Length: 47
Image 1 (tube, rainbow, N blue to C red):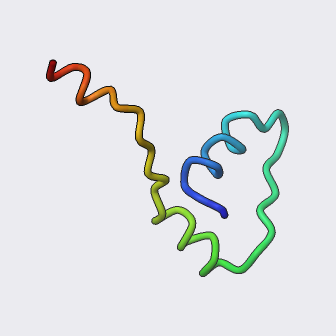
Image 2: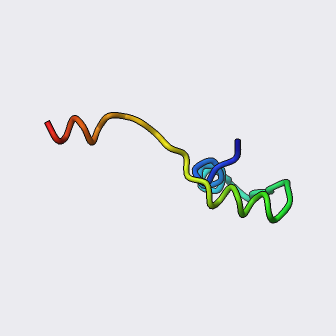
């Protein structure tokens, strides 16, 4: 699934150009979607 983080990774790793395939609506939806991650870091910092 396309997410904001995946687009950011592609953008920052692109050497010359970045080509996004898909409709503008699909890309806008991906940019609005944040991947949720669970590392437990917050819980460990509270301890």
